[in-house]
Amino acid sequence: MDKLIKVLVVDDSAYIRKVMKKMLSRSPFIEIVGAASDGEEALELVEKLNPDVVTLDMVMPHLDGLGFLRRQMAKQPLRVVIVSITSESSERVLEALELGAIDFVRKPTSLATDKILEITDELIAKVKAAAAVNISHLMPMPKIEKLPPTASYSAVTGGRRIDMVVLGISTGGPQALRTLIPQLPANFPIPMAMVLHMPVGYTKMYAEKLNDISALQVVEAQAGEELRPGVAFLAPAGKHLKIVRHPTSGVPITQLDLSPSNTPHRPSVDVLFQSASEVYLNRVLGIVMTGMGCDGKQGAAWIKSQGGVIFTEAEESCVVYGMPLSVYEAGLSDKVVHLNQMSQQIMNLV
Image 1 (cartoon, rainbow, N blue to C red):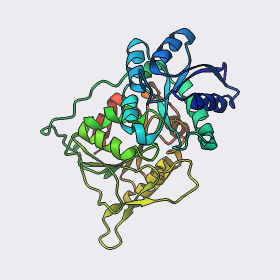
Image 2: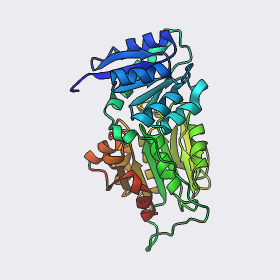
Image 3: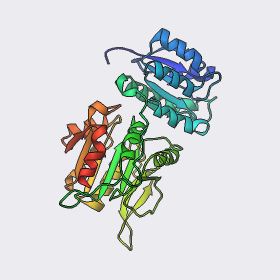
Image 4: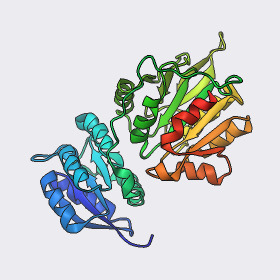
């Protein structure tokens, strides 16, 4: 890392500001340049200190996290990592991501204890990843109009090549899926399953919000659901989503599982991809999009070993070019696709 990452901590709790500084200071690559107790003070300090990354609480007096983001992003895009309690601000966090926040870390509910120190490694990793993000990728997402009910796509001449789409995405994922999914039609001819790395407490609400703006039906996956055309199943946070065959009928269904327990993420893109390849063999399209790390690389290898197809998102449209890069560098990507062209490329195969 060439230079120190300058971080501004924004939180209305003096205790949390102190602990956040302590946690971030454990990294030799991070310098805490200031702290603010509300959005108004944060706006002033951003202009004065020019931080590389801001850690932002959602619930604050005077000007809250959303108010700060709206005003700051309208003036100048900024790398922001939300640090918030789920129960108080789930909906606000999702809106913050739509406004251009990069990622979020969930505070433990027992704030006035050392329990908050448990998020140290996650916080440092996400601040470092945020610092590497291209500022030009942080503009608020344009409002996407979902396709009208009459919109439809015809299968490619010569018959369908793919019977299942599986998608893995992480940092920058909420924004990217809000662009991609509304571009798919209600009569999408095959099922889709998705893993988005999110803390517990967010995936159900996110699926509902995505469903509201999409012609395609989007649901948080439940155990034992039959995979249906025109439905995108989002893995619930905290559980792996697998595709298996029903023991009697043999039709593909969803399965939720806590194992394997040794994956960096639960749900895991690798686990979803492998299970889909075992059921659908060579008729799987796996898509690996924006995110840090390498979840999806092993899963892509499983899909490729069965003769399936892998798309990776282009660096130019990724918030973090980590997961797609790991797949591309392993020689597993059949096509590199910009986010703006992803829906059409998908439709070309289905």
